[in-house]
Length: 413
Figure (tube, helix red, strand yellow):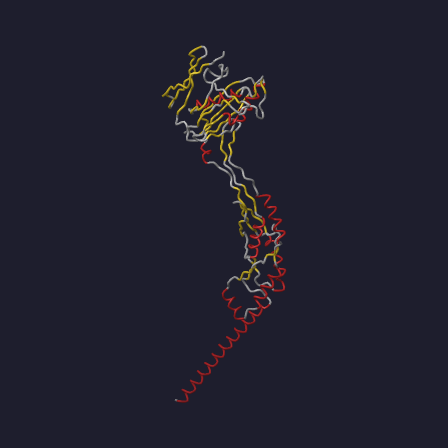
């Protein structure tokens, strides 16, 4: 019985030893296999190894130079976005004169992989994680400066202050100003160098330094959107006097009168012997009174306050009696002026121009400037040389007032 038990134990022991031997041999075999498998990565790049987005997996170190060359065109076609004055411009590495430091890439990958132990390589193979290497871009500062100089010629822009534009059909429009911009080449060069010295990927963006020259914009001018009043007088365009009318119109055109400000005809058009005016008979600048008269009537039709107005000695042929305004300037500096005050809450823009034998003056302001009112004038002859003028006020087309403007007595026929 004991012999039978002993034999059974012996058989079990032999089986156990055999099994353990097989397991040990399998482990040793597996280890040898893994070592053989890992050892091949002494000459081959590990799986999941990338140069940025380009795979170098399983490439032999012998072929690494050639493999990188195969990617070179695509790498140099990578993009850099530069922003100047709020506008983005896209360029390739090649546009900036960049190149890839291939030798540094090869050395970096080779040193890294050769420094790994078998255990570390085994761990990398098991984790199956990406190992990404950077390009190592080479740049030439002189080429970068040349690039920035060319870019400056594209992005630099002069400041344009706000202004008023008049269309061919005499419609006024306020045009907002645009800022000027000047690229700072030295500061921008340093920004590019800093970017290229760091970690850079495709479509990297950099905002370059520049100086902004801010345009002048006037918010109150933007409220001018409506022609509020206008008046026209006629003249003979073929006589010398017509020259003075047109010159006076040019001096007045574009005048802007702020709320509460007094407009002085003399301050814009006088003195009447300055550039452009010509002699007419024995007078200098004769004819400008007609433009003062045209402005006077435009101001009346706009419901504005008249500050200074003087009549001619004789009734003018181009306007009804009592609705004329004379102006004059003398060598002593004394002058006879016409003035009105802007009683609106908005600025007034004066458009003054000639069309054929017509002198036009238009006042532009905000559509609410007159509070929904309109005006008309009336001239009543009270004597051979006497006239009383009236201003009619209308609200929504209904007359609400008739005010006396002035009584004018002419001293000559």
